Image 1 (tube, rainbow, N blue to C red):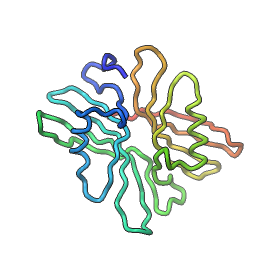
Image 2 (cartoon, helix red, strand yellow):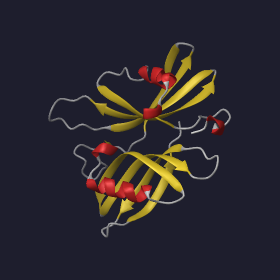
Image 3 (cartoon, helix red, strand yellow):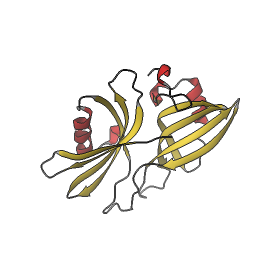
Length: 189
């Protein structure tokens, strides 16, 4: 994704974790120091300020004893770099809250490789839509009269010079298996 599309003073284009260069990797090393959790970056953005800000969209998984429910979540963690010094500016959870056991609430966040069959099917339906490319990276589901989904995705508009962004896509699958009531919500750093 082109650096030319950077909004003046704003965060630049989304970079997937698999495409991180040394600069992103170095900044993430300063995020990944929390005890009691494993943090996996999904994507990031950077912003030139007095120094540089990095916004990491992360999968956070607590380290728990066997047989203890693990409640995974997604966090947006912003780090500022001044020369060789890094400071964490903020972090916030942006996934849906989870009750243990998840009766009536959304379940724990799952990465793409751990989706349920229902999540896989719904994700494929969303990704097949025309006009926007979706790269769904994580999901949650909630059992209601049907299923509610919260998908976390990099969204790439197909219009010229459009900038990709990170978003939550809410969708409901009715009893007939159709996705209805889909909504897209930007997740901004």
